[in-house]
Length: 126
Image 1: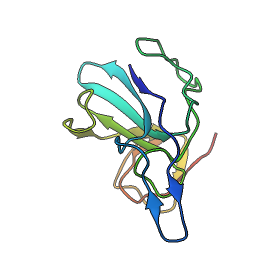
Image 2: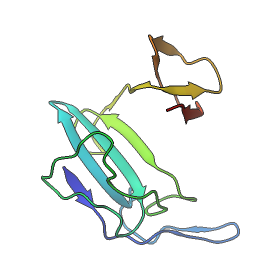
Image 3: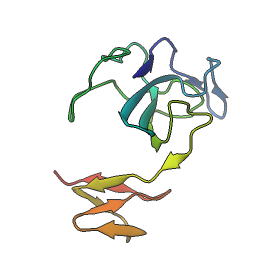
C-alpha cells in the first residue's frame, strides 16, 4: 500500500481553480489486491487517511474521506483499478461491481453485477 496524506484541498474561485500541490492526485491511497492488480483512490481530504503504508485493508473498512486535494475543481473520489503501483505508467483495468443500479444500460453486464464505463451514473442499492 502506498499513501499520501499531506496535501491541502484545492482552492476554487468563481471561475478559477488553484491546484496548490505538485501532485495532481492530491492525497491518495494505492492498494495491492493481487499481482498486477492495484486500486487507486485520489483527491482525498487532508489528514483524513486512516490506513498506513504496508497495512492491511479489509472489505468495507473506511480508509479516508472524499476531498478536493490535487488537480480537481470540486470534491469527488477518483477511483481506478490498474496493473501496477504507478498512476502515471500503469494500464487501467475493467472494474466489476455488484449491488448498484445505473441511469442507463451498462456496456457489459454479468449476473447481478456490471462493469462501469465512463460517464455512467451509479447508485448503491444496499
